[in-house]
Length: 201
Image (cartoon, rainbow, N blue to C red):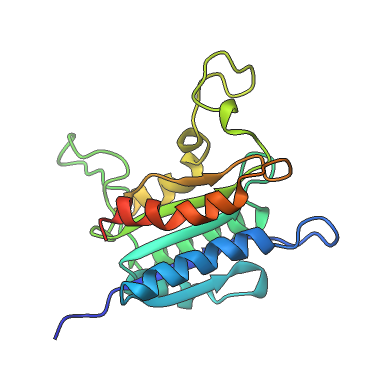
């Protein structure tokens, strides 16, 4: 019998009352759930703000074929509770040797590169993010702030953790300019098409 595939949906939203209530990020989570359920995936979920157990999160990662991060971008990164989550969960995965045993280098083979010691090969990781920044701020050298860098450049501190453990990184999906954007409904509508394309489902 074919093994049921699993996807882990991690929601990093941090509530600031009367400012950010998490409605949009929850909507993207629901779109992802609907998409993967229609593809017969089992859904695992973590809403970091509601608490978690690091050992259980390690096991969720091990069980999952796909890990999805849904995050607002606060000051050019995920909310601080996500960094805490990473430190606790990935350290747990390191100490148990379930995520990785070492950094990949050996004294016997100088060709072994740093960041090649992960045990999570075959798994895939993707970020879906909501931004106040407009799309035109990225991938354009004429833009003063980003200076030609794209969203993947800003997400490097997140994706590197997964790549370090052997996970394949897939193209991110972004909803830009959320406080002035008239196309949020379209961004939500197009999200499943992105998932279908990057995961080949």
